[in-house]
Length: 442
Image 1 (cartoon, rainbow, N blue to C red):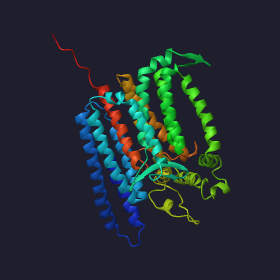
Image 2 (tube, rainbow, N blue to C red):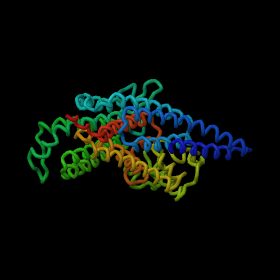
Image 3 (cartoon, helix red, strand yellow):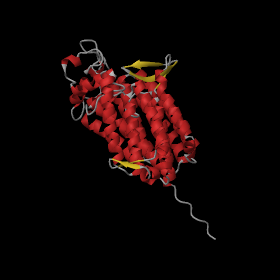
Image 4 (tube, helix red, strand yellow):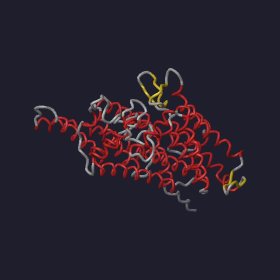
């Protein structure tokens, strides 16, 4: 499998570079060590992928044949890059990947007969998602990091509940719009050229969505709020076909963003850093400054077209004690990839994401029922928005947020729930691609 070859090649390059940087390194020892360890890691990764492939072929014989291989390629890039940054974090990432694949297989085996159970318990699923977003604010298990409440800590395990919430909210919106899409189009009153559905049908969806937004603002994790809001508008547009809904939604988002920037200090600081990343006063500020964003821009520019290759330059401390590229395994991993693999490497990674999203949307087009169609659309848009938010932040298209790059950045909860997301897309694609049963001959 190409993903296993990427793992072998990546680890080989890392080990050779590390040994060559060591005094008195032996070429034969370097090559032997690199080949044996790299082949071992590659074989382990290939074994995990083959096990997942067997589950897919057994339970979902008609599923999209490209969804999981594309996912495996992204995961292979992630494990290699995280290992290059910190081997300890890479081992933790590998453990979370195994757990993610276990839940991936469990989701497929439990729901392969259909997703009707998700429709029946849509309100329960929505409630679980909303409660999950509040957990980081609870004393004792949640704590503030860089101005936001992102994760809960139980013993030695850290988990970001928003990763679960993003799937839960999409499931609810897809189910609710499936039952009320016609009313949203035809009923209600027209205001400023837009049809506003009756509150009896539109109210529950607004309440659940508004509760999710309020709790996310309470936790100050606005990157996930942006993903939820974008998925909400995308599903509303797909369900109704009315362009006025996303236009009005974007206008409301702009108004809400203006309010948040003026009243949430760390968001205001990120906007200032985005506007003036090279301002000396912001660059040298210890907290809430532009140092992180400016360094990511320097790193990407330094990579050029083909990159600088695997080395340790971005991990050493600068003259004033701060790391040259802060949080390289998470927020800044795209900058590390562009620095070491160049613009071509970054573009290749984005191309894999585009192919994955395209296969998800193709699954939505082929789906035979409205719920599956809306669910596949929402899940695909979640991945697309997540990539846009983090890559856009690192490249200064939008202010920087704390969202992780799917399957690539370090983060246990992210990789686990994204594997569940891919499992749901595979289930939908299997039912969409399965041949219709022929009527029995008389």
